[in-house]
Length: 186
Image (tube, rainbow, N blue to C red):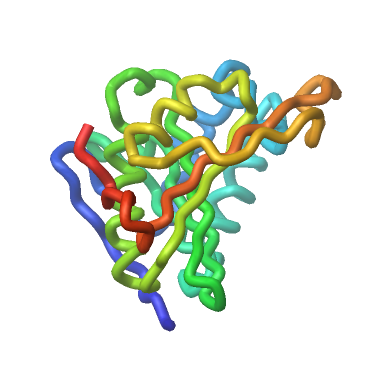
């Protein structure tokens, strides 16, 4: 299935493809140790060069496999939400990251819900899953608000930012299971 780039609107947000002008905003929210705490793949400090690479990479991703939305609030890029789609199994991994200044406002849930609603229709998805460091309770709350259920716990499966072994938790939503409720409201 082919997925064209699209712009989505929620009550507060615009989810759109990345643009070349997003570099400064990307740097502003990603160059934050607390933001990157559970995201060891994000370099710290997050330089302007890192921001340029990040924006360029997100602009070049195929929307058939990796639709990636820039999350915009009041004309400012504040985060991302993306899907990693496996068309063969009609499944997708959900990813999201919102700048720390905007935490605690339901923005990650609002953005993720919009992207998932679109992705379910665009790709005919039957299952969605996401994972996080078990210490990242805020991310787990987002998953629960999206109707996802805790499915797996992996002990010491990854290395954290400082080389420590981390435990990972996986949440999932089976859209064709009789008890599945599609994307409940907050």
